[in-house]
Image (cartoon, rainbow, N blue to C red; front, side, top):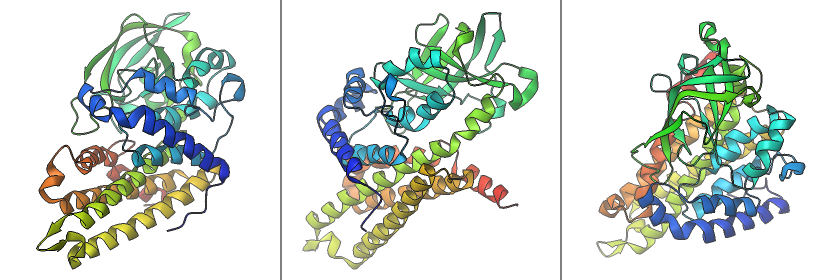
Amino acid sequence: MRRNIFEQVHEDFRATAREYFERECAPYVEKWERDGKVSREAWRAAGEHGLIGWALPEKYGGLGVTDYRFNQIMAEEFFATGSVGLGFGVANDILVPYLNDLTTEEQKQRWLPKFIAGEHIGSIAMSEPAAGSDLAGIKTTARDEGDHWVVNGQKTFISNGLLSTLVLTAVKTDPAAGHRGISLLMIEEGMPGFTRGRKLDKIGQHSADTAELFFDNVRVPKENLVGELNRGFYHLVSHLATERLGVACYAVPAARRALELTKAYARERTAFGQPIGKFQVNRHFIAEMQTKLDVAQTYLDQCVLSANDGTLTDEDAAGLKWWTSEIQWEIVDRCLQMHGGYGYINEYEVARLWRDSRVQRLYAGTTEIMKDLMGRAMGY
C-alpha cells in the first residue's frame, strides 16, 4: 500500500540511515550476536552521520527537529538491513524527550554534545526485581546529604545497561510519599558504588545488552537532578506515550522484514513439485499477513502524525502499542511456520526475528496493562 506521509527531507534521511546500517551494522550481525553487545564504534559512527539526537537543539549539535517520522525511518531501515542490537530506540525515542524537556542549561551543556556525537550512550533505569509495570513500587532510594544524594538499590531489565555512560534513574527521594516521592537522577559511568551486574541471558535480542545495575552508596551531585524534585513519576508518565509509539515503530518493520523474507522463501522453496507459495493455504496466509501489515502501517502512520501535532493521547499510544506488537508476533510466528524446519534453525534470519519479537508484548507495558489503560480511559 502506498504511503504518503514522507517528504524529500525524510527520504534523504532514509538514504543516510540505510547507508549507515549497511556499512556499520549489517556486516557485524553475527559477531555482535556472539559477543552479546554491539561496538561503541557503531554508536560514534551513528553520531557522525547525524542519527542520534536530531531533535535536540542545534547549539549542542542536534537539528532542533522534533518530527517522529525520523524515528520511524530509523526503525524501518534498521530492520530492512537486517541489523541487530543497537539501542537507538532508547536514545532517540525514550531519552531525547527527557533531555530536551527536563534538563537545565548547565546539564544540556554537560551531556548533550557527547550524547549527540554517540560518545555518551544512554539508558533509562525504572524496572526493579519487584517493580516492573508498578512504577510506584520501586525501592531504590536517594538520601539527601546536602550537596549530593546517596543512592542505594538495584535495577533490572535495563536496555543499553552495559554500554551506557548516562543512566536516567528513577529513585525514591521521599520513600514515605509513594509515587509522589519519586525523582529522576542522572547517574554517570564511573561514579563510585555504581556497578553493573550480569548481562541478562534473554530468549532473544542477544546482541542488545540488557543488564542489572547496582547502586551502593553512590554519591550523585544535586546538579544531576533531572526535572523537579519528587515529580519524577509524573515526568515518566508524561513521556510514556512516545515510548510506546517507539515500540510500535519497531513492531511494524520487524513484521514487514519477516514477511518479505517469507515471500521470497515461498517462491524459492518447492514441495510436491511446486513452490510452496502456490499452495492455497500459504497464498491465503500471505494475503492475510499482507493485509494486517498494511492496516498496522496505516494505524502507526496516523499515530506518528498525531504525535507530531501533539494530539496523540495516552490511550491512543496504549492501543497502538498492544495491537501492533500482537500483530508483529502473529506475523512473525506464521512466517517461521511457513519456513518449516528451516525456520527453527538459527542461521535463518526469520528465527532471530521470532526470538527477538517476543519481548515487544512485554516491555513499555504488557499487552494486558495497555488494554487496562484503555478500558479505564473509556470509563470502565
